[in-house]
Image (cartoon, rainbow, N blue to C red; front, side, top):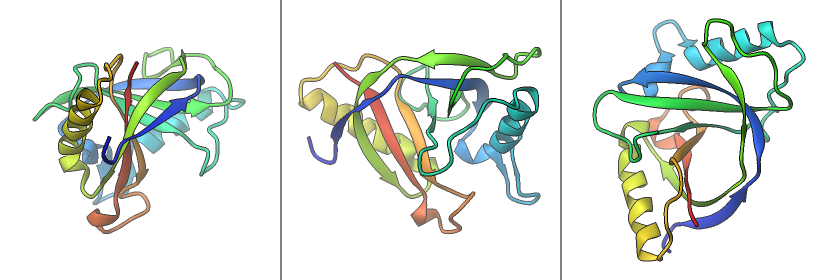
Length: 165
């Protein structure tokens, strides 16, 4: 499979939240330097001070698309951020803790604007089909570099992870 690597992603505990967005840059307000994912993590820590998110490079967070391939236009996504232990779910439903099972995933790197990530996901699904694998879960997008640490769009990097059997 061209550009696809198969790897095991271990079981982990994560806090998760759901969002409706137009694209992945919706999380970042570039005029105020606000980041709604950072705000979510800060809320989780205020309510669960004993729960820790691993430091880079061991931090693992990702988005899933319950509807499969990234749709054009408005999309409903789930955000997951790995933690060292479960805490207490937010009373207002802003996040909850879950145990995410281990998966075997076909992984492909996406470099460049996250606005074109749907093309990489479609390519990954095509390669998976050609290799005879069956997709068995929601695709994941694990952002590695983005507007939080890289100014140039060409330096944005994400790993597409698609559960297979």
